[in-house]
Amino acid sequence: MTSENNNPQYYKKVVALSNKGHADWKLKAADDYSFTAGSNAVLVTAIELSLVACEYPVVFVEKSGEFKPIAVLGLKSNQNLFLREDNSWKARYIPAYIRRYPFILSGDTSATDDQNMTYTVCIDESYIGFNKDSGESLFNADGEYSAYLERAINFLKDFQSQGQVTDRFCKKLKKLDILEPMQANIASRSHKDFSLSGFWTVSNDKLKSKKPLELAELIKSDEMAFIYAHLASLSRFQSLASHLD
Image 1: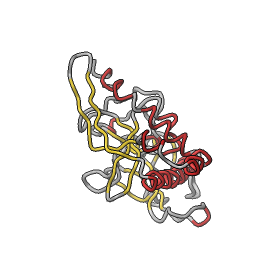
Image 2 (image 1 turned 180 degrees about the horizontal axis):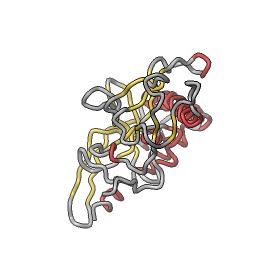
Image 3 (image 1 turned 90 degrees about the vertical axis):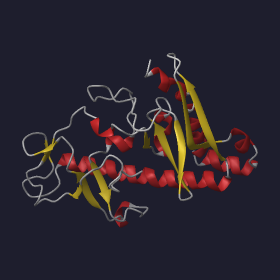
Image 4 (image 1 turned 135 degrees about the vertical axis):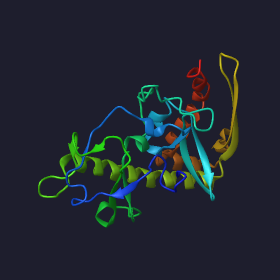
């Protein structure tokens, strides 16, 4: 998912971190998720589906023949029902894509092991907590990554690895041809009706029609658990309406 300026979703001014240009810069963490305003969905990884499914509906979107899982955050475009008026987050679990912000990796991150991975650590300079006055230092006196930044980079690497697992999972769903278009019709207690479309879900009927060997492979790879989490999450569509009542 990208923003209007072709940056990844939520990112507005992505720059490479430098121990020269950012030597004195700090990051002040805040319970402020205002950067997620105006988006009704966010990418999620397969590995976190069991946690995501407890809070959000998870569906698949298709672009250029490739599928990606997303957590639905709102019932209308540009609506995030999980963002409170004080910009804190309503749900207990926050998707990893949001938690990695304002950091991001760029470059060749397609390698399957850290040793061969080449990347550039970047940050969104527009983040409100990025400053020179207070917070966690990004570099130490020797110009090396601070312990804080090292932890952030390790999280980014884990996220990147989870993304590769997710891509393989989505390719498997496509190969098995078990995804189908879906429309969700939701009614709130205030009698407002909402209809969401343009997304895909796993078809129970198609799943049950697969050969035993194919199902066994899904179970062995833990991908069946991902599927069940996704299917269970669909009941969360109705709960989205409760955020409006």
